[in-house]
Structures are given as C-alpha cells and as structure tokens.
Image (tube, rainbow, N blue to C red; front, top):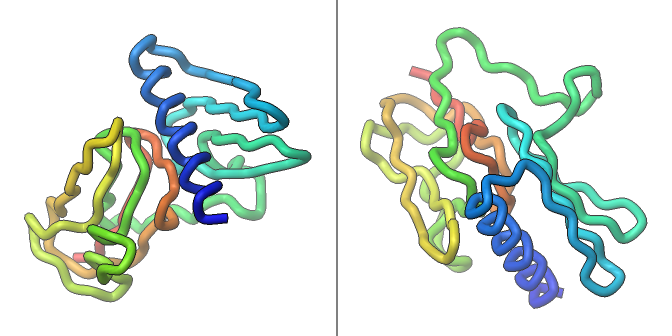
Length: 153
C-alpha cells in the first residue's frame, strides 16, 4: 500500500510540474481506473478527497462547510508555502519532526521540507515564537501561499 501511495504522490507531483510549466489552473487525467484532478485555487490549504475512484486536490474546505479551517488570531504569525510541493515534517521517514505544536522556534529554524520536482526545499521560520498549529498533514501536497504553520509570539 505504501508503494501505491508513493506512486500516486509521484503522479500528482508530475501533474503539478506540468501545470506550472504550462501555467495551467486545472488538470484532469485518467490513468486506468483512476482519475486525477488538480484545481489551483488560492489562497487556502489544499485538501485531498476521493469519491468513487476519483482523487482530487482543491483549494480546501468551503467557507460554509463545517470542516472549514479556523482563522488565526490577529497576534498569530502565519508561515505560508513559498512554492507548491509535498509537505514533510522531517528530513526522512525515520527522523524526528523538525517541530511539533508547542515547540519554541527562533527565526531561521527549519520548520519543514517542501518537495517540488524532486528538489527538497527547507522552509525556515521568519519568526520567533511557539508553534500553535501545523496545518498540512505529513506527505500532503500544498499550494503556494497556503498556510503551513501558525506561530504565536
């Protein structure tokens, strides 16, 4: 099953690269029985969903849905994704997470890695404070501009 997850992640990463290369807002492709669809809608964190064999990525929960992401308070500093890629909380699957909720960080500390087109980009904090929330799940595809972390001073 992990191999299937890795294959789907690679397919989505490749489709994302294709979108950026050709400046597309939407891609839909059928491979065998699976249908992959990526729809770039910014701002907002992406969400994976599946229904009847369809894998989709969109801009996140709708504002009127009960799963809508809560908004941070005025004092919270938001760390947004500088690029679209796959979010990783650690440098390898067996390594500890760079940060966890409640951890104290300083400006310049590595918070996560974003993988884009087989390049691993360390994302550093611009702020000192305490990690209040980590928005995406490990291994989740995130869009440029989507919130990754909320840091309280």
